[in-house]
Amino acid sequence: MLNLKEIFSRKKSLVGLDIGSSSLKLGEVVSSSHGPVLNRFLQVPLTKGTIIDGVLADSSALSLKIKELFKNSGCKHKGIVTSLAGSSVIIKKVTLDQMNEAELRDLIHDEAGKYLPFDNMEDVNYDFQILGDNNYNPNQMDIIIVAAKKDVVSGYLEAITAAGLNVMIMDVAPFVLETVYEANYEFNNDETAVIINIGASTTGINVIKGGMSIFTRDFALAGNAITEGLQEKYKLTFEEAEKIKIEGLPNGSEEDNLDLKNSILEFAKPICLEIERSVDYFHSTFGGEYIKRVLLSGGSAKISNLVTSLSEKLNVRIELINPFLKIGYNKRNIDAKNIESIKPIAAAVIGLGLRKIGDK
Image: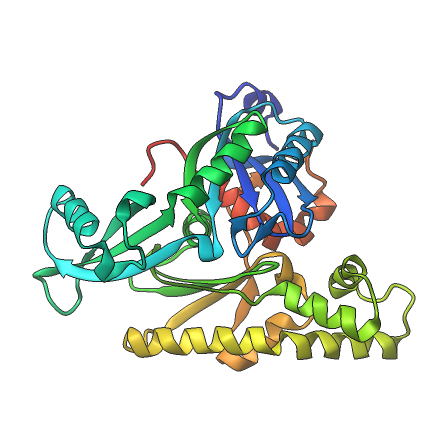
């Protein structure tokens, strides 16, 4: 039994804000004697076109929705952790000679053109993480570089600030799910797992070994492609097609719903094929690493039979990600009946809510 007095007497914490192309999610994670606890979770839809391929297109619309989200959630905290995703961020793994962090930062700044598709690093926010020694050459080390255009970052910052909030940490979407994985799953340092996040406009693939990302890829093909296919086939509005994609036909016959499921899988085929290609590329690049676990997250992860279809293509068992294996939730604010349905969509915002100032 969670001690509510302990939860509500906590020190001020940061709040996760997951900004997707179709919805906003708030996740407030607090500490208790039982470990991390999801204290609040809320999702609101985002007007289509507010964010396109990870780039903010309508700042005022985003600010208004953020205000609505926080007002309806009852959350009073102003410190925010959010993330960048899709084409707005570049993630690159490189191998370089051994050097210290100061030398590495200078090298990346001066020779950015060799590693990143930017002409001028003065226009870019970037960071890096040293993964460790290269497996094949002890005189070299593997690095992950993350970069985003400053105007893209400032666009999000300005919209969030206009909503009365302060961004304390700007994360990157694949690493957010890495945080959730580390917090919930048992793994050895030599074990490899894959997290596939199928959102509305972008599918992200993150390969993790020993709790650290070693390969990431995003592609602009995701749940909206299925929705648009259903919209055209059944002559529906986008909103109607989005609803039946997850819930089925409420008044449809068994035959009608079977036809719907088959249509959904047909429209999902290009996504599954691109995921398969990505995993094959990882295998060819990393010497055929054995994948122990594949986890599926994101709003489109709940599509009927998608897990089965992907499992057959990748020839590996796939399961929906469970961010509540070791993380509790406050039953006073979150209905226990909804936990199963929110697992894949709450994973990212829980990962954001777990972040602390000073984390690397």
